[in-house]
Every structure is written in structure tokens, then in C-alpha cells.
Image 1: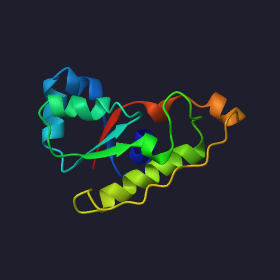
Image 2: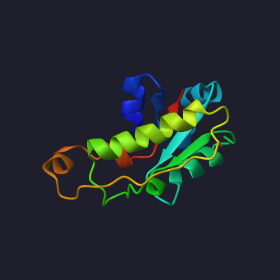
Image 3: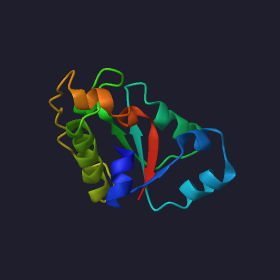
Length: 130
């Protein structure tokens, strides 16, 4: 999702591990960001917690499981990626990211060849900034 948002020019992917590790240049980059969108791949919300522990309080939070995309069990298909990207773009389009959103679960095609061949990029915890 984050890679596609970066390719689309809607956001710029950054390094969540660097934020957690308090890498000064990455933390400063995020502190100066106009807006931060964090993408979590499961209900544990590790990405959100990492940002909070690093002192970030204002950011938008996309939880992929609320779209029906389950970490470790959902195939990485164009449909899943498109669903996550659409939800992220909808959040970024709002003034504060807190607008009532109708998150629709994506219909998953389990066991497709495409899902087996695509890398598991969808479910990594990534920070995007606009």
C-alpha cells in the first residue's frame, strides 16, 4: 500500500524502524512532515504504538484489518492493494483524516497464482507522509 501511494505521488514512504530506533534524521524528517499517515497490518497496531512512543501525537492511522485485509492470511493481490490505497487516499483527502469513512472489506481470492508470486509488501508496518 505504501509503495503504491509513493508511486502515485500521494505520499512518501519512510522507515518505521528508524523512528522506533530514534534515528535523528528520520525523526526530524517526520517532525517536519506536513502530515503523517501510518499503516498498520494487524489489530495490534504496532506502527501506531511506535509513533506514539517516539513522541508523535498527530498522525492519521489506517488499519488494514478493518478493510478485511488480514496480516498473514490475506493474499497480496491487486484488489487488496487497491482497497488499502483507496482508503489511504480517502483519509489524506480529508482536512484532518478523522472524517467518517465507510471502510468496505475487500473480497479476497484465496490461493490465486498472483497472490503466491507477489511479495508480502502489503502487510508491513510503514509510515507514509504527504
